[in-house]
Image (cartoon, rainbow, N blue to C red; front, side, top):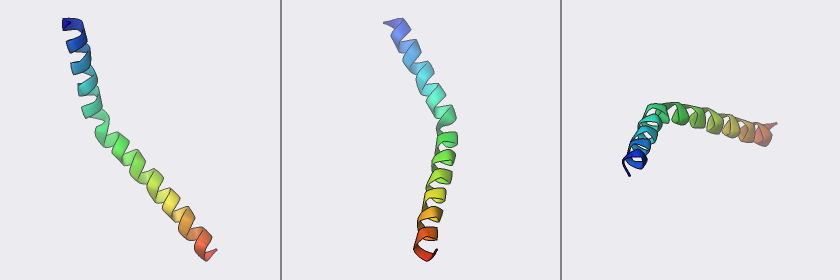
Length: 43
């Protein structure tokens, strides 16, 4: 049980550290998709 708890805590810490990077990548992906969509409307 202790190993499961420590593994969960480590996974939670890893997720907290990388949350801003995931948000950054998602923002770039959404911006690129919106740019492509707008480009098809006016292209």
